[in-house]
Image 1 (cartoon, rainbow, N blue to C red):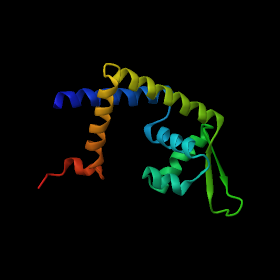
Image 2: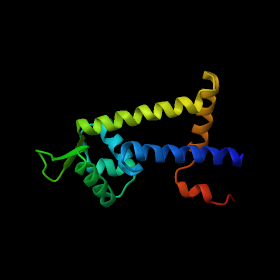
Image 3: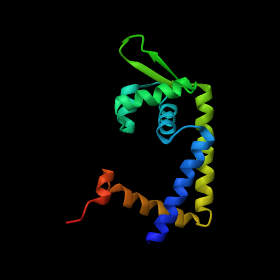
Image 4: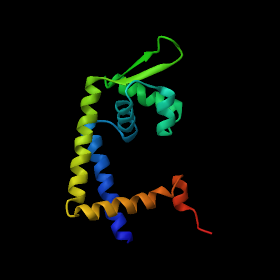
Length: 143
C-alpha cells in the first residue's frame, strides 16, 4: 500500500511543479486566483476565511497577483474599508488554462478505470478525506 501512495505523491508533486512552470504561480497564488475567479468580486476577508490563509499572508499573495495583472482590487463604494477583489481577463485566461490542465491530468490518471470504478474511487476518497478535519490528525497516534 505504501508504494502506491508514494507513486501517487510523486504524480501530484509532478503536477504541482508542472503547473508552477506553466502558470508561473505557486500553489497559494494559483489557488487564490481560482477562488476569486469562482466567486467573482469578493471581499479579501472572505478569501482569507475560505482558503484558511491569514490576512497578512493573503495580502502578499494579492500584491503579487495584482502586480502580474491577474486581479484588480477596488474599494467598495458604500464602505471604503471593504476591498473587493476580481479577476482580470489575463487572470481569467490563467485560470481557464489551469482548469484544462487539471482535466487532462485527471483524464490521464483515471483513463484505465471504467465509470463504475471512478465512482467507487471517488466514494472511497471522500470517505478517507472526510474524516480528516485538520491535517495534523494524519500523524496523531490512535488511542
